[in-house]
Length: 497
Image (cartoon, rainbow, N blue to C red; front, side, top):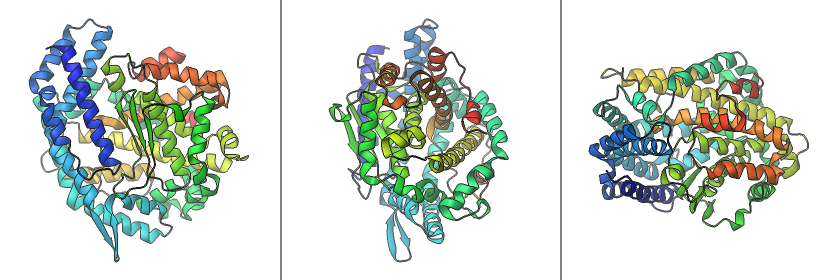
């Protein structure tokens, strides 16, 4: 195999696919035409290409940069091989999501925009009505396609000689899923008794609900936190972000190739995202504003991705700019998201002298998310573990409902047991990123003070980390930065549990 030619074609494919993702999910085009992109680059994702890259990896010198690059290329090829086989149902899922209209008592609401409507709905019964309609559409229109995707992922893992899709991801991505599961299980067990005391006061304050009375349909409203709207005005959303970047020595208005897309569109995805079409030259930050604190949190989260990608060294190889372990970029996203609950940032950027109420809410918000993702990891390890017998989909749905319901201590509907699964064990990226962010934040505070976001030196330190793209693993980055060992249980102390 000509590895340099493969790399050039792989980068072209990445540009096209990410650009298509941006245009569709930003609501700029209705169709999600990924089939043609995969077909145009099908030679990248053949069984032969996978085997040749396996051989190339085995021949590479252990510990060398070339071996690191080849490992990333193999992961890319395996993901693409699966993507080529699942492109039709994936594209159809996107089309259906964009086209589904929910009928709600005479009102017609698009499937995607219904999530925003649910977050903005003050009436609990109405939130439940929206949720029920979404779940029914998911069960009827989307789950057959999600099931097809999952069955294909599992079949290809077996075809490539892996014991399971779980084993494929662990080997190709270098994840120690068993160790991570042990750490998250300990976190969940440790936080179990404290969970009601942390979360219930904020549920009562935000929604007027006890934990025993809450439903999943209430969570979008809880995450929306409307009672905090006065503290997070719409008119300072962008300016506070710009001021924060200036404090770090970054002028967002002068960043060539960085686009901030906050315009509302009917078919725009309610889930904010960053689309790094060309790293570092063309990066999109996409947000569908719903108002209040949540807008700040998601803007700053995606800004962490955006600034990371925008500052990657353009001279790095394709693999280090576009591939690698996404726990790295997610850690920078969480680092910036964490600012909107930081008392020092709240005082300096929004003039809030007492941020204790915001901090208490954020602690509850974070604990819900951390326990939810720990439960998702446990579920996905079972889902992808290779032990599922034929006809056990109903059993998996019940298991999903049980694990998530136990984690959040509220009834959890089973209908999203297939939709609530990201490919490639991405939940493991999030979990490890939360741990890495905690360490990076501690480093910045110790080196540059509690107002590190107003330090040009802190900005320079971040840019040095960003320049490396995702060449290193999270474990390597942390070891080089502080000498510490990455462990999810660091969140126990960070949340004062």
